[in-house]
Length: 351
Ligand SMILES: *Cc1c(COP(=O)(O)O)cnc(C)c1O
Image (tube, rainbow, N blue to C red):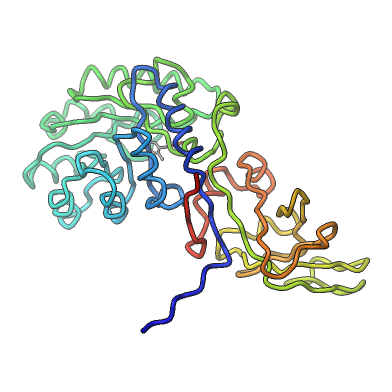
């Protein structure tokens, strides 16, 4: 018999009640439109296996992934007809997979439209570029026969700057109104999390929040509504007594000037605790903040245990991961602090 693998010294607690609350709040803020969920990148790093069932139970009925490889995990929890693949069909293998599973490709170009129709067509989604110059059929191509021939469920576009107060939001909205005159679809969708806050004119039929579901706050209007969902924790695997003059970590970026009781934590940049946290990050132990000293290494980070005399080997520390503060301290975006979280975290839902 194979031995049981011992539990990970890293755990990622996902507050299921907060996640469900955030979806319901965003659905409500979407007015007459329904909120779907962007669950690409393994549910923004939280784990699609954890977040999809919670969101489905909260009432979510529309799912967006980016890659075809992300489909199977999502399909373990929700019906195929409710899943859209944002990158669309690039080749015959992807078309065959779309047909076999029943998920909808999002058509992003004339070439993708032709490819889909030539292989037999059927219901798809359509992405139109209203000003981001990323994926999407250009406005100028909407009257092309390859686009007109599509059987479109959801016609969408994506806002480039919804987290800012800039002219481009209104420009994209006006362009999207024009799109609606050209493309005959069952549903229309424009807003991501931040776009929901821009108001009714942006809601159309379906909104596509991602980051705010997971606790991110892309606009201040959401700060009082959105709850923190992600609570990473890491175990102390050794306690050391560092003497004045001792150097700490790679490249000796920290040198003790007084005795330091230090904790070696089993978390490093391979887990998404990137080196940008070196000398800046902090962990929590019973209400006491423990600052990171020296450089973050691949599998370990060193913290100052001053004021945490009872903290010892095997104890769990909470990461300082409130999204706005964590993004600011690390220099990463709120999107990055979640999506970098590595596979060594044991992911679990609580509540
Ligand atoms: C990622 C993504 C979303 C979700 O955006 P958030 O800013 O995370 O709310 C919505 N639509 C598309 C097309 C996306 O790629």
